[in-house]
Length: 359
Image (cartoon, rainbow, N blue to C red; front, top):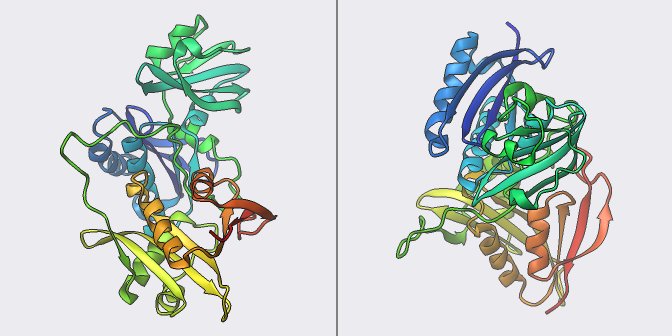
């Protein structure tokens, strides 16, 4: 039986799950869509199972996953991306993250503008030339968005008609577009990075808080869960196996901490002291937060624990040059770029060397 690519997108009100032939990457085998902006979590898994049933396939027939990473609302995006990461980990298949606007733009020809609903009377947008993104993604009010040389508009029907241009009938990311948006099928997929473009819409109601997150030292028994998260978050960056976490957690000159919600480990971080005599310097080994819990400041709290361990001494780290969220966090707490390592990661990605000077 032929293999299939599972496609997921939750960046728009359409909760989309589909299957595309893994050989030609153009034939759509099945698609299920639920139009409900408030039911991403409830509808995605049933749509996946229904699409598999429609195509006469099982999970064992999947060769890869492609997921739309936004831009879109915080809650919707994390549902789709966490599900994609879970399928990839459970089935040991690659997971490719793509810009959801690209999955619409892939169906356009010539100069085109793609817009989707960003709420707050705004739109997410990107411009395309023969299906290839040339500007964006961005977010703004429709009145502030110049169509440029676009000859057509695609995307949200409620917004595409605001620009006085012909409107394409492609209204949301679909399976064929998601697969077409993968730039290089031969390359190791980059870690999934959500395109939020702004802070989450959802805020705690007055007098309420989210589930409490406790930051505490990691235990030896946490190594397997850390390795699982590491594989999901950094599949192409030489993720650590459980044995490496076990060794690091038990080393005297290291500090490894975890973030827990109840009994569930949702984040981890580690730092090591360098050298045997003062003045010491330190190196951040890793920081990771479960996709389903990103955007809550957990990573910042984990980093603060590592920097407390280092005191006011010099701290070093490496970070992928395309990990904009992490770079912004590190800069915010005093790190600066001091070098570049070309093709540092296993998949060929580059890394910045960053350093926080003695305080």
